[in-house]
Every structure is written in structure tokens, then in C-alpha cells.
Amino acid sequence: MNQDVEFQCGRCGSSIMFEYCQNCGGEGVTSHDCGEDCCCCADPEDNVACDICRGEGVFPICLSSPEWCEAHPMAGREQVKRSTVESFTVPSRPRRRK
Image (cartoon, rainbow, N blue to C red; front, side):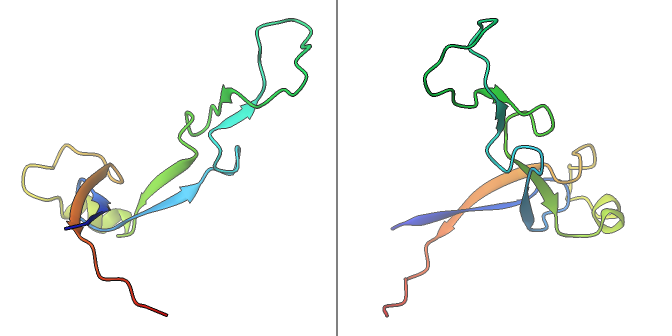
């Protein structure tokens, strides 16, 4: 049986949304550094990790309000920070045929 991966807030169990990093456009990299003072790369590709999202390209956001998430942690999750990503698997739903 196929399974899908779902994500939730590790503190309160609410759904998580991923917002793209505005600094790197969701790519996780922002510039090129080949280690040379004067770059002679024919086709320099960005390879420096974004310093805002730390190379992730996205920020996880708990869909519950900050107040609700902080006030309603799951049992044993009182020390977990809001929007900490937790993943789990669920059975895949059958795809509709067009």
C-alpha cells in the first residue's frame, strides 16, 4: 500500500504550512563562491547557502495562532518550539481518474 508523508507542528499537532524564503526565492542558495578571488567559472551557479533560511529555502509555520499553540501543547511536548516540523505517514488516497 502506498503512503503519503504529512507534516504537523511538533508542539500542538496542528497542520504546518511551508512559506518560501523571500531572500533566496525558495532555492536555499543566494550567490556563487568558487573560492577564487577572481571567478573564472564559465557558468557560475549559486552555491552559497542563504543566511536567512540556512539553506532550507522555506520556513515552517504552524497554522494555529501563536497563542493557541503555546497554550495547548501535546502531552510531553511543552518544551518543543512552535512550528517545529514533525512528519508522519498516512495511507495514500486513490487518485481520481480524469
